[in-house]
Image (cartoon, rainbow over all chains, first blue to last red; front, side):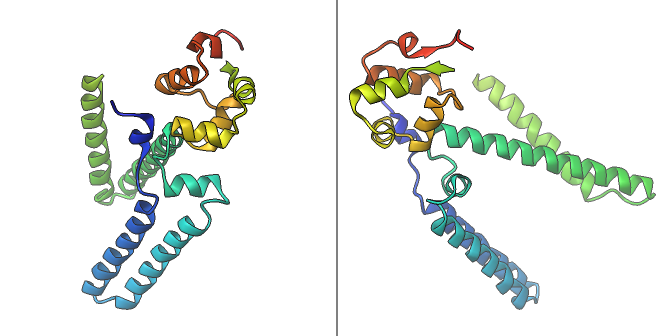
Length: 133
Length: 65
């Protein structure tokens, strides 16, 4: 039987390592795009974020959740609510951007495409999750 | 939700950290439950009640405001 502890077990190094890996991906992408110095800045920002996760975890509850969102059911619930809130903010901004582009008589892409992806992703998740119960 | 976790933990001579370790959650989560800022899931509520050899209804009061 799976225990509560098993459910929430994940390496505390996952998020710092993920942030660093994302920084490397940024660097490579910007290097390919002939902007290696910009890539170094991106990598430095992500490395600093990873360092904050490691160094400030014990001093801040918010940083602790950023480092290990799935530490237990409470942090997972907070992470889920924060993720939903950021999604709502993002969708609102995308819809507003589409309206502004339309009002200017300009092409609403790529905002409209982003909105479509978000809408489809929401519907797919909604259908899948309600089937799971 | 009102509960008797703090009282039962004190009777058992456990710190929040020790109870958290036993439940596989963080100390902050135990603190949030004790101060009624967080309502635990059913599995965690059952685990807590079993840990103190009580029923869920004896530990958690869903009717209290």
